[in-house]
Length: 477
Image 1 (cartoon, rainbow, N blue to C red):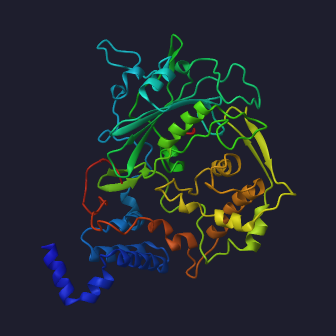
Image 2 (cartoon, rainbow, N blue to C red):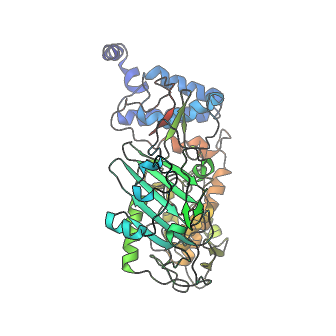
Image 3 (cartoon, rainbow, N blue to C red):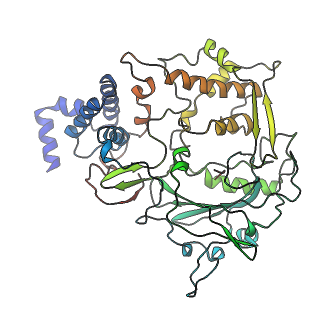
């Protein structure tokens, strides 16, 4: 019936069907851009959002896949009263990757009840040996990062891979027996074994059956000891809303002391064996095309993670001068000293501007393109609530950003300074309609490809779904 109707439309009004309601990739992109422009010209108002939604509804029975972000944002603006408040949990009992301790390998089963059912999670005393035998990527390390839940710099992470899901768990072993400020040793020597770690267990499970893959987070900050061994209570009710509002993707790579780009005055290079362990773990943590998913509540989709329309660091427009020589010269050395300390404060250093070291503005300018990788698919978006300390760490300390680009220390400081100067300049700029230029351009609504199965809707709002569930649509972990 739909095919006949479409044929009828083409016969009566070919120009309307081809130009106003396109179905080919090029036409969809052009139409999407024009809809965003209409919304912007209408002052980014609720009324202009309603008009754009009406245009989409008139054209398509099913919203084209590459219009999902546009539709979601505008529908949320128009029907904000129908959307649930910010979720404090990303777990929903109807769609859990794991639902009980019994979904974990038996090695992690702790205290049993009178029926022999596990009541707690433990780490076996010989977990590193077990992980090696089972080919579970794992590493005990000292973090160079500053975020965390427990005290001290020591962390242990283990990955249990599977065909349909991966399980990643991280705990904080006790601080070293011989912990010394700026001690160079990279291999931890915790006062207690991993099985006697501190109170917080982080578990992230990844549903590999969904596209994109969906991560679920549990923060189990309820550890207690029995005969010196740490036990963790399992829960499907953990509150993680604040974590998801900052962490735009489930994982980011770990940065152990002594691993690549080391600061020779405060750390020693780790062994090749330990470095191989880090690479194996990071290979899992840097998997692309992964999200926190979304929930369907009372027929409305609520995406989990940061707000869709927050500015993405490294985005620029020709309408605002943020890459000219004069702009870069002004921002490059606006701040000349950066202090960094790791969790536990045994790894700390001042990174300072060297007046004798020259910088290449062209290298800084070309490196201000974070959005090319941090697009929500390859890497998580560096949105407005993302920690600037983490950006500083990745650029100035860890040297993992930007990837495969050789910058001297002054150029790294300049890059950090100018990225945030650029952000401030763009967010303060208004277009001819007095709209914020970032929101008016609608960059975040243009990131889904218009190629492929155009009418395969991933938008539950168009399907009138009333079910509840999770759809596909602190630490280093």
